[in-house]
Structure formats: structure tokens, C-alpha cells
Image (cartoon, rainbow, N blue to C red; front, side, top):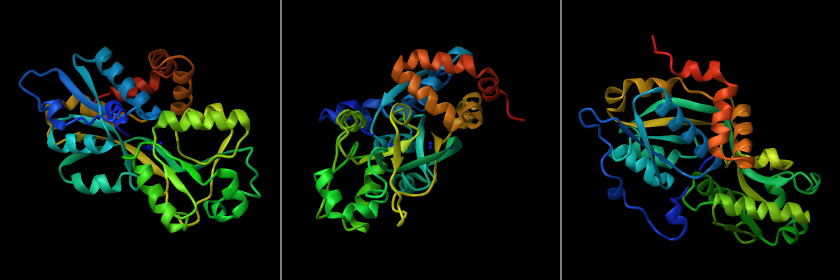
Length: 296
């Protein structure tokens, strides 16, 4: 996704809410060598955030503390200075509502990756002549195949907010229910459908490892309610660049081509994030080195 989407705190998925006070202040004290970064367990966000932590700790004197939190809590935390940074600001559409609330209170260091896309996704075995557009969901034959359900992710995700608008825009409210769950629950439902070759529509995004595992496609969105191409930016608290100029430079320089990111995410799914991150660093030395070059 410079790129989907999207989240809740792990505890929030279990029904618990994290209060911002539990983070403590991220404002840099004199000589502070710890940087606090918020993240959500979306596959792209997890890879990029853990890659950033690994590189910072290997190549600088700083330590990185990761705080899992819902996307709304992350924006609030960076704006309040309770978090130093978040590496998953989906702009301009997906997180538009969150961005409006913090604009002017945070600094956008630019895209980490571009070409991200949100939308509703179906397995490629679903015939295109029957279901190729969100508008096709109004067909009675399609409704019966899908059991009146669109499988979603975390209720706080920007993609879910856009999906709610999409339901209304296409007049699907009375025929379908948008099921809130988690990213893991969405891919589990997709895996079950794939095994049985059942029809399913899920809220999806690229980059995501599921596009490496299965043959999938986005439904066309003639009304454009799911947004245009997105970029995913690094956003830091006010004063971060002054307190941590070296790290701000790294985040400003950092950019991962979408195909590289998606391949690395699939590696992480097949092995582990630690192994996939080490492989990515080994496979792309020139690119990684360029992130640590001092800005002129």
C-alpha cells in the first residue's frame, strides 16, 4: 500500500480497551534513547513496523518500543505525544476522518509505500459474468450465493468505515450485513471458502499475503466509494524530527516497492516475521542502505 488499512489492539479484539494513559509520554527526555511506535496487527503494518524496529536497533544507538493499539488510538497518541510515531497512515481516503482530527498536530514524513488499494475482494473462481462489480451484489442469484453477508475486519478500521458508506451508496443495507471481526478472522473465512469453493466477499487490501496464497480479484467500484489508490505514510509527533533527526531522516528516506513488500509479507506468513525481515534486508542491501543516508 506508498499503502489498506487498517485495527484494534489485540486486547481490544478480546474485548478490552487500552487507555492512552497506559502508554506514558513518548516525549524525549534528555538523552532518551527509546522511541515508541504504535502498530496494529495488519500484515503490511506488522512487517513494516518490525522491519523499522530491527533496522533502527541494528544500525543506531536507539531502542524501539512497540505499542499495539487501534488505529484511532494511534492517531490520538501521536497527536498527544504519547506515541512517537505510527507507520500506517492510509491516505488520502482510508483514514481521512482520523487525519482531519490530527492535521496540524503531527508531522507527515511521507509515504513508506504507494499503490495501496482497498476494496471488496472475491476468489477468482467466482464467475466474472455473475459477480464483477459491487453493483452486481443486488442480483438475487448473487445474494443467495453469499448468504447476505460481507466479511469484514476490525470495526475501527478505515476500510470498515468506507465499507459502511459503500453499503449505503449501493443500496445493500437491507440485503446484506457487514460482519465485523478481525483481519485474521477475515482470512480464516476466506480460507474456508477457498477450500470448499464457496462464494465469499471480503473487505480486502493490497499489499496482503492473501494475494500471494490465493487467486483473488477486487470487485469493480463504479461509485468510487472505497477510495482511490492510497499511500501509507510515516506520521510522527510534533517535535520528533528535532528530538530524533537521524531517525526522522530514515523514515523520510524509507520506501518499499509494493511488489517487494507483498513478497516479504508472504515470506513472513510462510516462515516468521523475524526470518522474513532478515531475508528482506539481505536481499535488498542497496535499498536499505539508501534509507540511512544523510539528507543533503
